[in-house]
Image 1: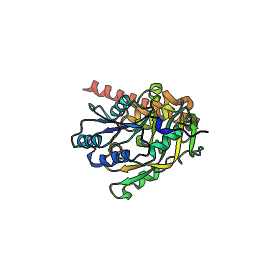
Image 2: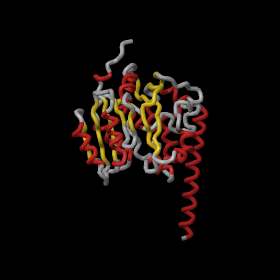
Image 3: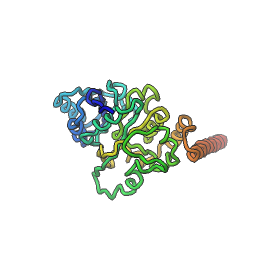
Image 4: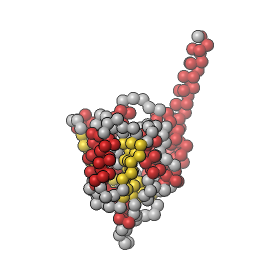
Length: 299
């Protein structure tokens, strides 16, 4: 097999920002350090109140590759992710969040693997961690979510390409950790995937990334690079940590989406789980509505 010339492929590095000044320079420097050279950078800012825009303007003026900056009206994180994709012109989308750091060979390795198979929709890898507080603060999270590619029941995920349907059939798919692929900064996506399966679901606030990874799997192959290609920063100000401290409607909406889009692709164990979740939630809310009606009658 001939080795593909990856630097003839345009990649769109999509960076959605909001008040990211504290860490953004490190993220942008990791883009500048890429061994892959054929890319554009799309930055979509959700009305930052710090000097995020000054940092990205300085970055734009310091590099010789195209950087486009958009001011986006805040409508939630998913809307900003989708806006970045809509503005991108590359064959592949490489997300980078403002507090994460790409390894120098990240884009090159991911694109090289994607280019070996015409039906690869997603490529992911392993990640290191950077802690802004004591690592012991994240012991519980790391135990559950630190190593993702080994959390399957029957899949041996190794360097290479596998059918997305094989991932969906694994009986551990919806067990912890729920996101067995990784955060958006860890993923390379083919842009025409969005034409096929749509965009990120903006009604979700915490699970919209892996809902999307799983939604594309019935149609595409998935590539895995057995290397540490991202440093994922853990700190208390990031959206994941904030969402973990409050209830979200994801718990209600996600099972319904998975049942609607993936039910017949899943292992029987996970089908039973979804049936119980969806019908229990429906029953629970019916009971709440009945109680509300009774209270209103009394009033």
